[in-house]
Every structure is written in structure tokens, then in C-alpha cells.
Image (cartoon, rainbow, N blue to C red; front, top):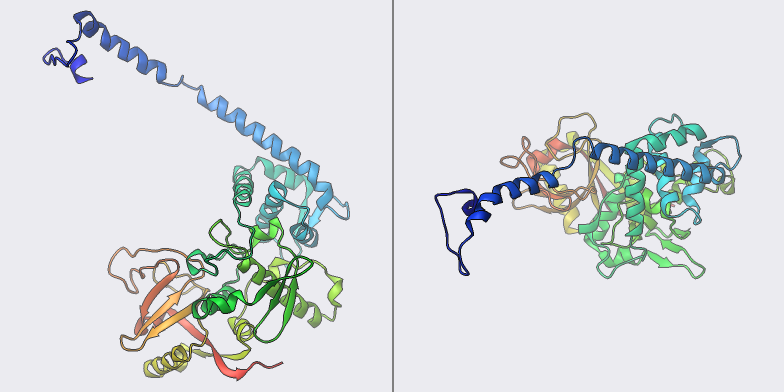
Length: 395
């Protein structure tokens, strides 16, 4: 191209030189070609606007068609129980499941005391919200690519372990610790049921029957993709059933009075009951302020040698190293008592690279949620340690 535009250079490639008349017209031809390739000013925006409007109209029509099926009492609005019913319905699939989950996420933070209510017109108006529409589209694509088997050959695999939008780090961290200790043991917890669904047999002897996982439930729980089966979602749902039973029992309600297992009951909790559920052993805890360095060192040495499940938590609102979240529960995968280093796992399954030397100021190199913290710094980051004891769980 330079040879065509510069009269001072006249290369003679094999096959002969460039005719003079071509050299004279080539710049004009090149300019014309570039102008032809350039989009007309203002031409792209109307096309994009038209496509967006068509997409909004399509989503609005889709919601209008399906809303009567979601609105069980036909009062023109969806309450939390109706949304939970839709989430648990096997008939709600694909784009419909994506829409109901997106609506749940949109309004759950705005609800107070579980009194969420979404009117028909309000939901139709969301079709014009680009963020909402993109979320529905993204969730629909995730479902299309989802793995539906219970376990892949490599499961349970911590490299594909990722907490979803439900705030159940207190549940997933003990599960991750159990996977780290004995993957096959976690695999043995879940068995396909003869008539469909699954049976989960926990370490404390409790058995929970879990119905087949719906499309919406796949989107609600731990992050799903094609790298792992649905085993973690099954465990989340099984624990949700246990929690709902406990909640209705405390309120004096019969178990059948609320058929839906609401996902909001899973959010937030204490890892100690989960440790007891998984292992059949009681769980205990210590606060960092109650243990000097040497005592904490001895405790972690003893627990890791006995291969106990261990978790630790951060305080909400406290200034923490970059990459470390507050108000969050982590698993402890090991302790190097020679170097006094704690191997920690974040159920987010995140990756983080410090901007400088690893430590309190810059954070710690994290791969698939795993990072290493010196014991002295561990004490400044984590508020409490919760762990499995050797005593049988109370009935």
C-alpha cells in the first residue's frame, strides 16, 4: 500500500511493475473504498433503537401472556409465595424461568418482612428496563448451556465451586470444607430417588427427599455452567427444606401449610448447625479475642491433624484487605504449623491478584477462592473460628 502512494518508491514485484495509470488512480480508488465502508452518520442509531424497541415489545408481550399463570389468586399482583411457587414449578422453563428469577431478584431487596408484591403493570414496565431485559436474556442463555446431570465424572470439584446470588456462604463453606476433606463422602450424600428427584442422607442421620431441580432453581442457587453437575444445588435445596421445616415448626404451623420452599429462608446463617448436619458431630466456635496467638496455633494444629471441618468469618463493616469480603464465611482447608500459615477458601470461587506485596494492605493471591494468610494477619482479618468437634451431634 505504501508503494501505491509514494512516488519515490517503485518496487518491481515478480510479474511486472504497476502501470502508471493505476498508480495515478489508486489513491482515489482507495479513498472511495474507505468512504463506502464508513457507516452513514446517524444510520446505526435508528437501527439499534428499532431493534431495542422490538425486543422490549416482545418481552412485554411474553410477560403479559405468562402473568395469569403466575398470578394464582388472580389479584393482579405476585406475592412472594406465588413467585416461590413459580420457581418450584417444573412447568416453568427456559425464558419463563429466567423472567421469574429476574423479577425475584429485582424486588427481593425492596421487600420488607417477606411482604414482596409485584403488580402486573410494574412487571410489564420492567420490559423497558435494559438491565432487566439483559438479565433475562443472560439467564435464558445460561439455562440453554446448563448441565443437568447430578454429578460429572470430576465432581465434586472445588475449581468449579461458585456461590450464587443467595447469601448462603455459611452453608457452602462447610460443604466446601467437606469436599476438600473427602470428595467421595460428599458424593455419597446424594442418591437419585426411584420415582424421580433425589434423597439426601446427611451425616447426622437425617434424610431429605428433594424433588427434581427446576430451571428456576438452577438459576437461584450456586452458579451453574457446563463444568459441574447440579449436586450443589440439590444440597442447597435439601437444606432449604430443613430450614423451612424448622421455621414452620417454631411458628406452630403444620409442615404442609406452606408447600413452597422459599429460597429467602436459606440466606444468612451460622455454619455450626451445617457442620453438625454434614458430619454428625457437634460444632463449636472461638472468637479471636479469646485466644492468644499460641492458643490459636495449637487449636488449628489439632483440628487440621484430626481433619475436622473448620470455617472462619469476617466482620461486616470492618476495613479488610482487598479481595476479602466483610460479613462473609470462609472455609479453612489447612494449616501449616511450621510456617504458621492458614489456607483459606472463599466460596465465591474468585481469583484475585494483589497490586503489590501480599498482605493486609494489598490482599492475597487467590486462585479458585483459595489463598494463604499468615496466622498473625489471619487474627486481624477473621473474627471467629467455627469447627467440628469429636462429640456426637445432639438429637
